[in-house]
Image 1: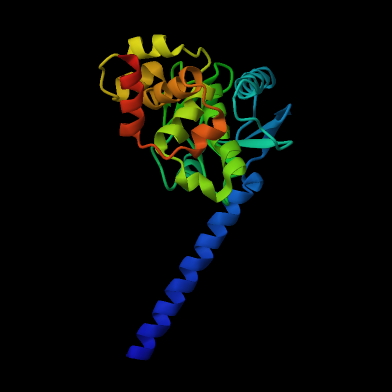
Image 2: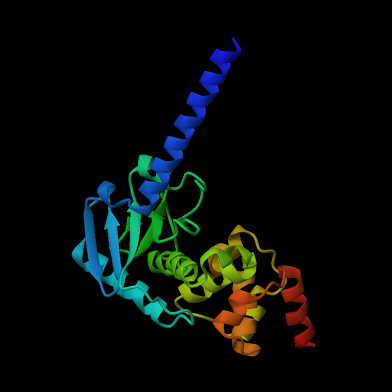
Length: 245
């Protein structure tokens, strides 16, 4: 009985190990599951459905423009974004975060970005039938997730030390097309809770973006200083509020 149990346990572990390796390989190189692609500049978008030439070109242009103004520069010659329109692809590639609109896998798998369904003609993200609205456009999600990819290659394993407010706030800072000044964003957010309605109106992580805007534009931090900080969200907020008095 013990021998049978041990054998079953070994077989189960082997199967799980093979599944994990297969999933990792698929995340690292998902191209075989995406039949259509379009490239412009450093960005290639691949999809499981045909990509309209005009809408696809506008998407790539807008995403690249957002990345060009980023304080964290893209060093690789090509970055790939995969759009998962089919439901089974969404479930597969968004397995760790099924409710996410975009995802980037952490180091060492972090070399590709994935977006849920796309309407390229309108520049909108489509998430399980829901059509996103500005400022969270298709180009915003593209620049947001690719900023994570670029930060990954910039930091390597050190990415795990970056506090969430700096990690997500920088991606939002890059992805927002009409970037507010610190004062504009602070006044707009006021004392509103950081709930769904706030994020719909001001981006995915408006409170984190406010902190990043403060440290970059008010304190004069470089992007390397930002990514090297170990300040908690509470400590960073306290510094920002103390400086406003």
